[in-house]
Length: 337
Image 1 (cartoon, rainbow, N blue to C red):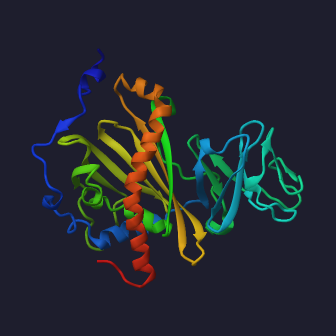
Image 2 (image 1 turned 90 degrees about the vertical axis):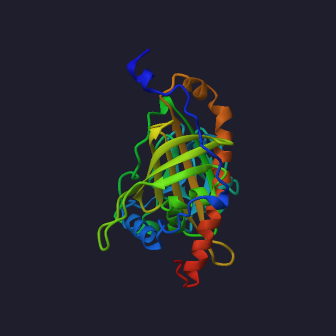
């Protein structure tokens, strides 16, 4: 047995001393100061994105059918060329405006269903591709007119564990809010044990608050236990950071799954029929473990991914309600806190 293996606890589970009823938890509202959360959001919003937006999961964009999404009010279509390279561009056919998301793809050629206009990803008949990037897990598109920033050659990407040692899944949901409301939700870890008591317990933010008038921290470090069943939990230390204005990343620093990453990306879609904003939450969960048995989890990845997405969906059912409520308050001129 290697020295590293001897340092890994045989079981990651812990038993809490006694169950605590939801209403008997330690209140966290004094720690979750509105100004502290607002400062963290403001710091995130001024970081450069290079005009890159997450389109969706890279695996959802295949070689035989187009993928479409409206991003920041811009209709985008994406597909793969014959070599598997990601292509993205305007979603309206340059001929008569047909929706290219409905176009079939064959041998890397997208062919409009209305009149057969063919696109191979090169500029043609007024159609110009957008810069696109496939990071192996997520597909990105660069929209310079929508972003309004100085363009970057590629997205601002967080560090991830090597793909060969991970199980990854991507969840996508939508809500009636703006990206900053999603970012604000993720930069408020104090809500975890109250809004998600089915998943979290014993949460403590261990970073000291910034001094009045001082610079906000570039992240938040949290000690928290993931609930398994009853009194059984898995304690971890995690850090939340916002590397760009529409992304918040959680890295597991210590405990079971050390090195795992959860990336939350907020992509603005555009207004709904009533003029309210819509945002897609595209969350990438990248799980890893130093345990030798994790190889079995990787082998079972096709079965695990739906479970990982279901867990994310349950959390975002509540978190999107939080983000939507925050937008409602902001849009009505009411400032919480």
